[in-house]
Image 1: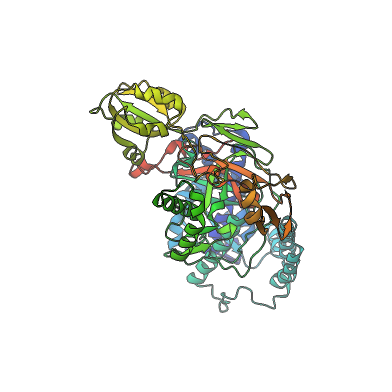
Image 2: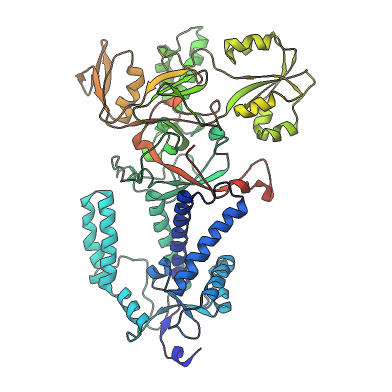
Length: 635
C-alpha cells in the first residue's frame, strides 16, 4: 500500500453494510431488467441461455460502469466506495471492475462466513471497499464524501423521499413523521435504534451487532417492497394451465394497479394469515384496522391480464379445510346431503339448518380482506362488460373471445377395447401430469351406461351410444391437443365434456338461475357509481355485493327490500367489479362459483416467471429451463 494511503484514515465497512449495498443494487437491477425486457421484447422466445445472458449483460453493464465513474446506487446510499487498493483516491479500471463483478456474484457468498477487509474478488482485482473516517476536503472525492455525509443533506434527502411517500399515500396525517426525521438526523435526542450499542472508543461493532443491523434492515426493506412494490407468488393448482403451470414462481407487481394500504398493518413479517407451525393462530392483530385505500398505479386492469387477488369466498374459513373447501361449499354440500336424506327436491330450504350445524360443530375463522388467500386467474371482464358462457365458449359483450389459444377443457377419451390402455408415451406426448393421468382412468366403458348423458351435450350422446366397449379416460386438454389425440391409434373417439342441468354450487346458488360451468349468464359487471334497479328476482346476483363487500345492512321483509333500514328498489355501487376465470376451464374454482371480484380484493399483476419446477421429475430435471425468466404477457 502506498505511503499516501498509509497516512490516510478510513474504515472498512461491515459485512452488514456491504450486504445492504448489494441488496439495494440487486433490487434496482431486477427492476431495470424487467422494464427493458417488457418494453423491447428482447427475451421473448429466447432459450434459457439467451435469457440468462441478458440478465448477466445487465449486471456487467450496470455495476462496472458505475464503479469506474463513482459508485453504484447501493454504495451511494451506504456511503461506501470501491477504490484502488494501492491508492484510495483512484478508481479501479473498467476491465478490473468487470472481473470484480463476475467474481463477486460467483464467489461472494463466502464473505458471509468472515469479516475480511479484502474479499477474494477484491484481492484478485486490487480493489478495496472503504468508508472514509477522516475526510480530506482538499480532494475532489473528499469534498463529495463530506457533502454526502453532511447531516443536513441526509435530512433533506430523507424528507424529500418521505414527502413523496406522503403524497403517494395521500394521508397528511403522516406529516407527523417529519419531527421524527428531524430528531434522527439533526437533534438526536431519542435513541431510535435502541438495539444498537455504541462501541467503545477505538473499537468496532461486534460481528453479531453488524448482523443484527443487516437483518433488521433486510426485514424492514423486504416488508416495504412486498407491501408496496413487488411480491413473490407460487402457482399451487392447475387452474391456469397451460398458461401458468403448477410450480411456476412469479413476481407480482403491486405498482401496476396501485398497491393497497393493508387493512391489518400489524402482522408477523413474511407470513400471510397464520403463524408458522400452527393451523389457527393468527399472524396479525385486528385492533388496528384501516379501511380500503389504493394508491395510484401505473395502469388499470385490462381484459386478459393475469391478476392476483384475495379470494372473495375466503372471508369465512373452516380451519380443518383451509383453502381446500370453502365455508359456503361446505354449507351447500351439507344442505344437499340433507335434501337427499329426506328425498326432497328443494335443497334451498335445508341451507339455514346446514349453516347452523357447521357453525356449531366446526372451528371457524373470519379473515379481513388483505388476509384472505391469494388466488391468480385471468381477468375476462372489467366493470361494464357482459359475461356469458354458452356450451363452454366464453362471450364478452356478446362476442366470442379471440386469441386465447391455451384454454383447457375436459375431454372424454374412449379406447378401442377393454384391454387397450393409454400408456406413459401418451401421457408425456400430451403433457398430462402423473397424478392427473392416474385419476383420469375410469376403467371399463360400455355404451349402454346412461351416466354419460350428464357428461356431454345432448348432440354427443348418440356418438357414445354407437361406440364399442372399451376403456374410458377423462383428461384436460387444449382443443389443438384434442384434435391430435383423436388420431391416436388406440382411441376410437374423443368427446368434449359439457355440464348439463343446474349445478347448485354455481353462482348465485339460486334455482332461478339454473347455470353450470359450461352454460352461464349473462351477467354484467357493476361499475363504481352505477345505479341499478333491484328486485327480488335479481337480488341473488347482487346480494353479496350489497351486504358483504360494500358493508350494508340488507334485509328482505314481507316481499320488500330494505338497505340500512330503508325500503328501496335501487342501489348505487361503491366499487367496480371484475370477473376472473381460470384457463383450465373444467378444473378451476373461479367467478363461476363465487361471483364478482371487488376492486378492493385486487392485489397485483403477474409479470415475471423467475423459476419453474416440475413435481413429476427429480434433480435438475425438475427445472423447466424454457420457462425461467419468462415475462407473463397479455394474450
